[in-house]
Structures are given as C-alpha cells and as structure tokens.
Length: 437
Image (cartoon, rainbow, N blue to C red):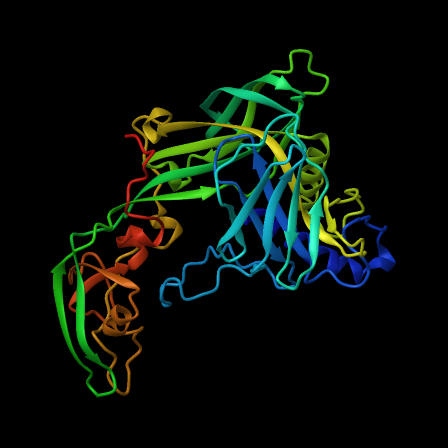
C-alpha cells in the first residue's frame, strides 16, 4: 500500500505544521479538520478497463512513523525480526462497485485490508461507477461517480545510457504512447521492477547446528558442514514503484507522448548487475485524479515541511453516506490502463565494465570468531555458535589467515553475513513466470 505510506507521511507532516501555525501560512487541506489527523479512513482503489480481479485497499491513518522501508541491515539480529510496516488495516468491511448501467461487483477481503472482486470485470467507457463501502461498525461510505475518460496505447518502452542532471551515470527508461479513444489528456505512470540477484559470497555448503544448549559452560552442540539443500544462490525480487509520476498532453497538438522518463537507475545500483526487467503501467485518468496525485507529488517532494509553498487542497472523492462531516483520505479512480515490459542486461549498456554488487552496500566481508566465548569472555565479538543459532551467518570455508588477517579471536571457520551468502533474504528463489533470459 504505497499510496497509504505517502498519505501517512503527509499526515505526520501536517501534525507538525499544526504545532507551528503561528509562523506559517495556512495550508489548505480539504480532507482534514482541526480535530484529529489520526484514525481517518483511507481508501485506495484504481479500477481499470482491464478484465481482471480488481482491488480495493482500506486502512486507517496513524500518527506512527512509517517503518516499511528499513534499509539498515544489522548482522547481529535475526533477519525479519524487526517491524517493517505501521499500516493499520481496515478489516471486515463490505465493499462493492455499482454501475449506473445496473452492474454490481462484490468484493471479498482476501488479506487484511485488501479486498478483491469476486469475479473479474472491466470498467466500460461511458458507464459511471461508485465504490460503496460499509465498515464493520456499520458506517456507510460512497465515492463520487467515476468513469474511464479515455484509452491510450504504449507504443514503446526503451532504455538508454545517460548522465542525468545531477551528473550521475546510469540507465534511463522511457515510454512512448499515443491516444486511442476518448479524452486521453491526463496520465499517470507506475511500474514494477524485477531483478535477478546472485549472492556474492555463496558456497554450496553451510553450517548445520543441532543439539545446541548454551545453558552449560562450555555449551553442548553438534556442528557439521553440510551441502545446501535449498537453492539460494540465484533469486529474483519484484518491487513496485513508490513515487508519483503524472503528466498531461494538454496543449500538445499531436497528443502523443515521446521519451517520457519513467525510471532512472544509477550504474552503481546492484539491481541491474545481472538481469533487469521493468513492467511500465500507464493510466489514462481524469483531470481531477491527475490534480489529486499532482498535489500529493508536490507535497511528498517538498524538501522542507516548513516551506511557505502552498500545495493546494487535497480532495478525497469518498464521503459518508449519511452526510456526516467526517474526513476521508485517499482517492478512487477509474482509468484506461495498459502496460508493457522491458528486459535488459548490464552488459547491454556497460560492456566489459565491472558490475555493481550489493556486497559493498551490506558490508559483505569475511569473518571469523571463536565457537563460543568462554567465561570470563576475552575481548571477542559474538561467538560463532550463537550466530549460527540466530541464523545470521553462512559458511564460507575453513579458517584461512589470508582471508581474515590479524584476526584477534580466530576460530576454525570463515563465515559471512547470511545476506551475503543466501539470496533469499533479498528475493525469492523461484523464477517468475514472465521471466526471460
């Protein structure tokens, strides 16, 4: 729920702004009142003209900071032991989409806060739709009428080696498009990128620790070096875009889109080191939706929450059925959608050049340690048995002084942080159905 995270950041910023109104110009936000910026219903729905299972996300605003993106890898903690998301989902609601042509589509909650249409359906141009929500507590909400305004086709998605305006060299991904039908003037772009990962310090063997009991001194244990039973050298990770990319062709006589930048990736980013794919998604939307996302983009890109720049009203098109004055966040839109996929390898743009590696980003280095720290412990770091038990390291080789020179507490093995020898911490070891080599 990437849009939720952006909205929550805006709410948190507004809470800070509220405490400083004496020195700031008023920021007009239609969806927020003076009482509270928390526990507001957040509605996200991008309903399309594609025949597919449509999705609606429901959650509640929260004053907690967003913890979803935790990019700090701590080699002394078990991977996955820390919270990654502070979204408070809205479960138990009744959700449906109603068309003025008499159509009705029911939704079922498949995951907490995520509601999926019971049948696949596609919005029809010329038909108006309303999203209808009844929460578990019995409160009803509805959206303004929405409709697909137009359609456009992606004619090409392509990548080029460039140096951007900040002087960074990398790969730019562009899209070309042309209108097909209806009012196709306002666009929003998103993407899903999938990249191949190869663990930089992988070996076909790993530790196997059994019967470990650290309540005794010394601890009892059985430690073996065994052949890996799981393929964890090559993985794949898919990440959705989390920025807002809007544009318009108003004033463009041809109404065609040429060389619109969708993504820039530095040549030092390891995600393009092996093989990379991007699925570019194009949405033809209404002027109102384009304005809404444009305002969110302006606010999210503000370098200073205390800027005097006014972003304008943020308008939600969802409201209480009974007319109560309750703020609702988010936006429901109907779009003409299309998508196109691109693949490329690092060598396509940087032939015979050294590939980037995540080894540097995650401090992938050779380590050694005593099997356990005796009592009283010497000036040594965490013992190897304790690290294996916490599943934070993987085997590399028998001890070799040339790999870890000047080690103060050498042990019988060389090991590496698990993330550096096991790619499943960064992706899945199953090849995606769409993948092409």
